[in-house]
Length: 380
Image (cartoon, rainbow, N blue to C red; front, side, top):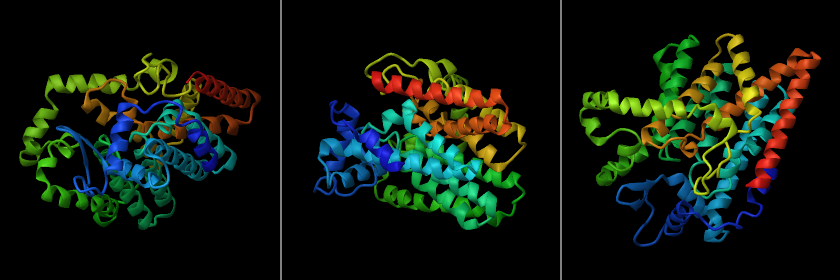
């Protein structure tokens, strides 16, 4: 399935010229190791614009066997294929059904936002495998209680911090959600909570060492993406700045706009300059399965995994809201696999009822997704 997804994403990948963002990332990847650049942790594009390392180094690695023009898109296609494989493994565990897991993986593969960014040589898709690995590891932890799985989940989030400018916020809030889920599940000993937290912090020591050697880089990297340098020195000022009514009102407006159903499922901004070029991030029929999935998870009572998935969807747009760009799905693409998980739960709940109407509904939504996906690909 992963190989099929990679082929789907990689086919005709060089037919369109590289965008400015793709050119910037490819240029940084090609320059790794030269006398001027060396092997930095973060990559400077301009005075206040930097790139995170994982996308750049991944592109450079693929560039060893592919042309610089194709390397970024092929690397993204590989990440997209990995997401599809991880979605299968995750839903196989959550739904205990191989056919439903296949369906969830295929839904992720053809979801417009995932499809587009898996064919774009930029960094938007890179946080997704780390979020999927986190959810898979923490779900396994709640099933078996093995603390190594909790550590693996925290480590996935910690490494994922280095994937995208939105990732420090996103991965940090997902860690808080993880600790809350562990606490509410009754595992309240400090040593238990310290396992995922410590694993999360371990990769950040690399950033601490790098910023110690390059302090001028902090204000325009983690100072923009996470905590402003002045607020590290005066946390109270940071809190006051965050709750400033004007700033908070703007961020809340952008945050709630990220959940606009008409944009998410029906029609995006029609601009050739935007990655989706007018398409909605999700297939429209996904909305019906999503509602059923959320209902099914809530009716089942509290479970840690339900909290992780629902809270994950809720916190995904937080970083994008701080960046000030409306409907910037590339800044909260981690919402996509979480919505797909919930949609798969919805289809599973219909099929589990066994009556003719529910089964017809499940197959009807599935067929609508296939038709919508075919229309999207044909018009892309």
